[in-house]
Image 1 (cartoon, helix red, strand yellow):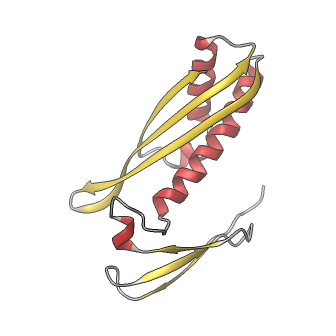
Image 2 (cartoon, rainbow, N blue to C red):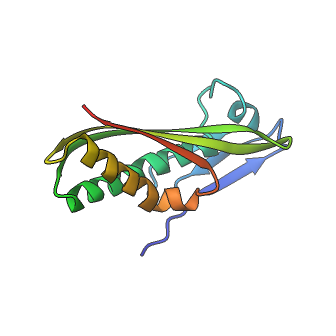
Length: 144
């Protein structure tokens, strides 16, 4: 299995500094990062580790769910998946406190219960979910 790489160049202190994260393996882009913007409600044109984790989790979950739907005898027509990753405080330190996965699916061959079972199996089996198992991960899954 492959290894994927990202690289960050950072200059300055936590509060006054900033950096750029490069998606090195895919070469699809370099994105600005900043702790004050990371901790603010408005991202202001920068990304954050939490947004990158959300992207990784939503895409991994979509792939895992498509697999589980197929195993259950269904056909995936479309899945719309979002991941909300929350940065909070635990014992005075910035901590990823929750992740909410939301999926709306158009699926052939499965009823709502079958879709729920596939979604729960995908949540449990997704490699990113496993890597983030210390975080409270919730799931809101329904057919459209």
